[in-house]
Length: 490
Image 1 (cartoon, rainbow, N blue to C red):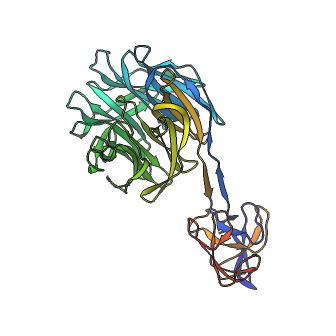
Image 2 (cartoon, rainbow, N blue to C red):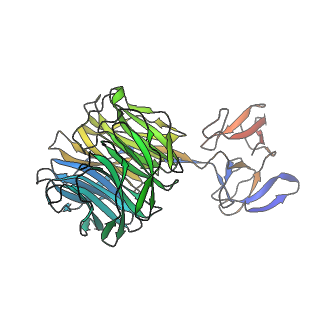
Image 3 (tube, rainbow, N blue to C red):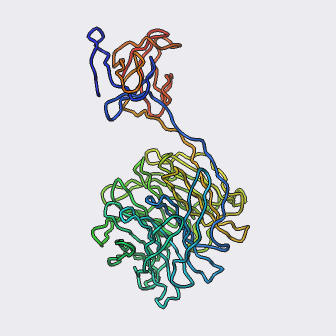
């Protein structure tokens, strides 16, 4: 604390520099720089923007990513009306609206599938991968580096990451290794699953040797990066399994395979990382329970992962559609510190629906679901736009030419600067920002309260008020000795 001085007549008080204006009697927290601030809540109301058409009609294999450098969202997809050619298009968020540039073809041929995209924050480029059917390469897996300029995107030369049959591609960026990791199904080898490490240099990408992470017929596949553990986590297979992946140079190795249950997953599988909770969250359809939609929280320790109990977010059948077309997606909103699940709600005309939730320990507390697209929807992908502080929800509109649509979504949330440890006391005097404020510390009697009940314990609420029941976090403020007096706990 930046303590200016103690009052010798009141040893349980100290003068500390205020960050922001303090009012007399306000509950305060100590900041990381040693200043003190009033306890407050901030937040935003949930807002669903209008739907915007993007790309071509009759599109499939959607995926999206956010380019932090360009502050743009990129959508990739396959145009089924145009010989299954692959395209990328750049989106710009403004408020709760989004506009798009002209789609750019990035596949070198026709009959493309499994288009995927990820952002490489070290290279400040996006990497788009795909299954390339008729290019004389036995449905090879290939990737290209994309550079955004304004509302357009250009691509470098295609590089093969697997020269044989490739399907069910999923991608993540490993920030610790500064590499791209691609997990995929090897269709030429009994549909076993592999992963490969890619290194971006300029507008090119090179790959190490691929490595098996399971020797079973495997689909679907989903991968994310755990920034706390500095590892990737891969979820995969009908008998839902997860493994931690460690990148070293251009090689990759795997920890112990952990089962989440037998015969769980259909084509519905998605995974994300919650940076606030420092947990991985897996979403899936449980075939053992009527294909209900569920989530489970995973905790990485070393090269292993463990999971909490499942939480149901959709108590109705999530019907699989074509391979490579996800019927659910999960993403993380770091402004709201919440996960967001998008899916078609079969109990409500299969409308595009989003439900947000907060990871607490090893479980998820879900909010009320919200319709974001009032048509029959599927093939979801979601990206978090860090500049706008909002999510961009993509889906396919099945009632209008199977076209791609995008909706900007403001997650509703409240946050507080109160933690379980930073409450220090109450302001004995008011103070302007940057000046010394006299603070009642532990054991001091605050005589500037009102409406208290003598003998009653009081807890600090997340908005800075006092209440007789604990909030979350639970912080004991002190005990009232009169209507206007509180013995500060601190």
